[in-house]
Length: 476
Image (cartoon, rainbow, N blue to C red; front, side, top):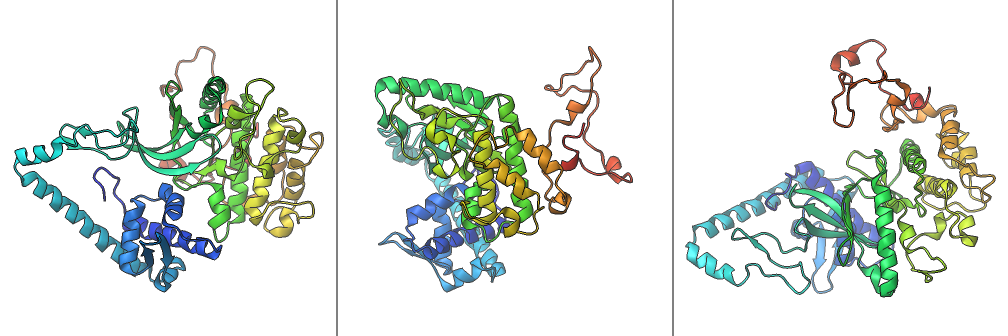
């Protein structure tokens, strides 16, 4: 395990090994070539150890074949057994032994290096010290006589570790925030500028600035926070929280089954994020499963609010269309005739389509069955809600997220689907129900309130105690 990384447990080694094997099998199942780089791009953002090290282990253990000539990967019969849940104890033992051996070798190599005469080490390092390639940031940078990294360093603060994905606006990297030694997501606007003239570039940067500043004002547990930004460089970037569990697209594509309670929970969490954004007059404009990111606790956080605005066409500055900036499957019908007809109802339409796709693994069509026909565990009234979210006519569609939440509140059988483990973890601020004394002291931002509202163990042991539930969310 590389120096400075968080300790990886044996359970993580087991699950991440299975994750890589499952992705190789999935590619084969769809008749695709299992190219090393393609699988690496899919897996890299979700694993704790470099992809190449996992492949070396799985290859040596006989679970995977790495054809270095063709740069392809193939799961062996033993590897298929691992994906299907067999021999996990053996896999874990082999993984622990492999990485412990590798770790011991790294330590031994470092100790041998320290024992070498200082002058000899300095002479060898002299040609590499402070070396930076023509890319302006990639290469070996010596700090205090030690070679720190061969990755690209951005603004001396962020070390790019791996590419997570590329979209119509920019490329997202898994990166390390060097001063805090934590992993983050870094989104860089680079390739996009190749499509536009210098005059249009200035308009893009202006819009990017507006969008990022508006999105940064959205403070909600179901909205991915923006940590940092640099707008004054050739390739602007922003830094946000890293969602280690991928997106809802990964669920739709790769999960064997998606519990109906989880689907309903993610619908509600997505709606709560839209409710908070719409209250600030911020609209997503291009919502799709890729924007519903899943954090380390399994909750959805919506990303990229307003980002499609950066390259939307208008009559003056930007007139061409950039392929890949949105997905037609989630576009509300009014956007076909009027691209500027953006508002709460365009986001509501997209969320309804995503809800259906999470339930069925396919997009709804004109004659598709209703949600409760697909899964009878759903409350029957959910069909009317889905139908009203996705009506073609805006006059027949929900006008606000609050209206949807009111109808969900009144569903019979909701509590049977949302048990204590699948409760929506985010609610409207309960302090909205509290009236504070005029002139009362205490700054909630600074944390100086006299009373801590967190329940104590004694509170939890009292008869009748229940955690704040979804059904209590908006009763006032």
